Image 1 (cartoon, one colour):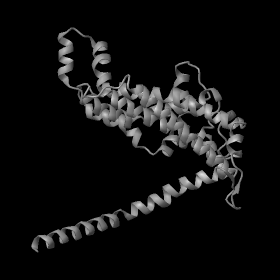
Image 2 (image 1 turned 90 degrees about the vertical axis):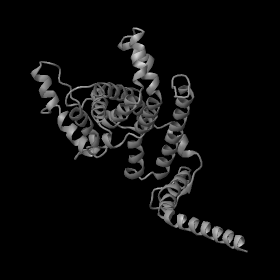
Image 3 (image 1 turned 45 degrees about the vertical axis):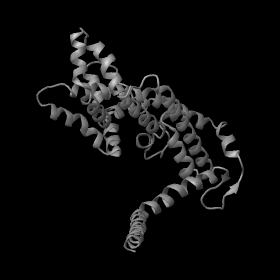
Length: 309
């Protein structure tokens, strides 16, 4: 009898713990259902409709998706986004890795240097954008003033379509302290015995870097690459700040050189009130990100090495 009672009490306690666990998770569950799952499902439905927020959605089938590939701005925004992805992400990853390697060396005041390089990444992105708008001002910006003293060419960074995207890449590279910190942690996890063995064999710095360092931190490089690509495909805040002005709000910059994909989604949704069209764009972006991520994972088998290997 005592064993039966203990089993029943144990089952009751498990049910109570389960109920308590669900109750504690309810705020997150409700938040996920209301603010994540519902918008995802709703956007999938709206992408097949003509919807402007003030009238009921009108089902139009695949018309939004067909219109996308006839929209010159859609293709331009995709081109600008691919530019910032293929050029900006590698530059930021390489710069962060080089900085991490420098900050991993033994030197006096190393903690101070690490702090200085990391600080830009904790500055709010809006504040950073405002700061760089002043720095890159073609007339009285700090950068052009410095270039002028050196007798060098002074680009119109924020008004010349040739330099708008490089300006954004420059600012994002300056803010890559978080990426640098993750690289630094990975570098400190590489066994020193490998370097000592390589030195005994007569390996130089370049040989040790390509044969030991890169393979050892390749899983971290993979993580940084995927996160960088996902963030670049959703590039918005910096372009929003750089392209906004008193005379033209969210114009996409000179000759739409800063009209990135997410910015164009914002324009369609909240400036033109084409919610169905914007939802279709969002789903196209989702499919692009999924496809690119799968390709990277498939190809990573050739260059990513794990401890078990």
